[in-house]
Amino acid sequence: MWIRVLGSAAGGGFPQWNCGCANCRGVREKTIRATARTQESVAVSASGDAWVLLNASPEIRQQIESFEPLHPRGPRHSPIAAIVLTNGDLDHCLGVLSLRESHPITVYATDQVRRGFIEKNVLYRTLERFPGQVTWRRLVLGHPQDVVGADAPGAGAPIERHAPIGLSVEAIAVPGKPPVHLEDLPASPEDSVGLLIRDAVAGVTLAYFSGVGEISPAVADTLAGADCVFFDGTFWSSDELTAGGLGTKRAEQMAHLPVGGPDGSLARLTGLSAVRKILIHVNNTNPVLREDSRERARVEAAGWEIAYDGMEITL
Ligand code: MLT
Ligand code: MN
Ligand code: ZN
Image 1 (cartoon, rainbow, N blue to C red):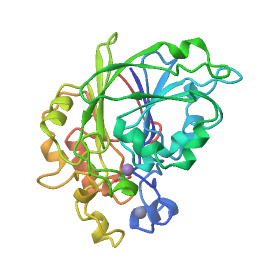
Image 2: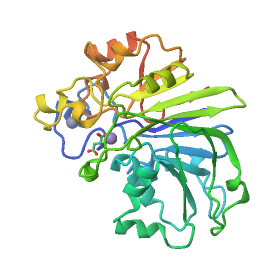
Image 3: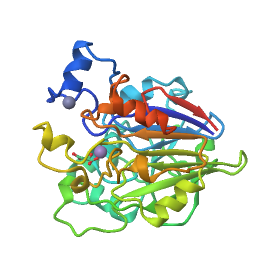
Image 4: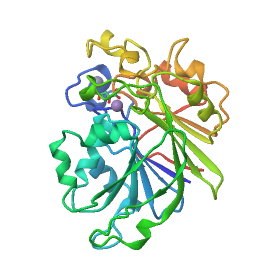
């Protein structure tokens, strides 16, 4: 299994356009040891031929261009067979609307996330230019399914897009919340999921949990059995936004378990057998972004890595 981090930051990226926190200023002015990051998205492939994107960030165009295996191999072609959405947050799904150049695409999402994206959304019409432009495939919690490409006979869609790409995906409910723009809707167990991606031939699994409000038994079980783990690295501490005068919500109110502290994910996720353990969806305020910070040293001492754009993993 070939894993490429296209974007590793939380919503807004790093630096964020309207943020003058110490991290954002420091990375702009090159006065701290830190690297800019685009918003979270990861590409995964079994063969290197066909790829699945885990989330579609607002920076998807630049991210596709940044990685040659995702470039077209014909006049109208894309090696991206499918996109899987872990929730309806805009940093995870706005990129789908950017893929509007009349190309058949396949999107895996829970029914809740699909409805949140298409209902009352007049901009979605840009993906209804021809029948079957988007094939939605439903993620049913706890049911692994083979990842397959678009089944619509769109212009120039090569036949191999219809075939399974050698990976299966299973969605695991994660304590989360509806996206900010749908917070008036009742919460659902399908609002936010983690993913277990399997390559049965290679016999390896990737657990992808980029937004986690709480480590439920189901989340803990999935992480325990995976060969590679990506986990929510949004905030180091609960009051990171409020203390910095940057926001009004605590990490928990945004359904992100902090990494640090006695109840944080670093303390709770000890003893995982995964060969690689990586924090992703890192917010611009998080001190772990600074390569020489105390918090970064703690993360690394515990055997975790911080995702960066361009990071590659082979399992
Ligand atoms: C999150 O990860 O909590 C969201 O991306 C926040 C947001 O949509 O502003
Ligand atoms: Mn986010
Ligand atoms: Zn900032």
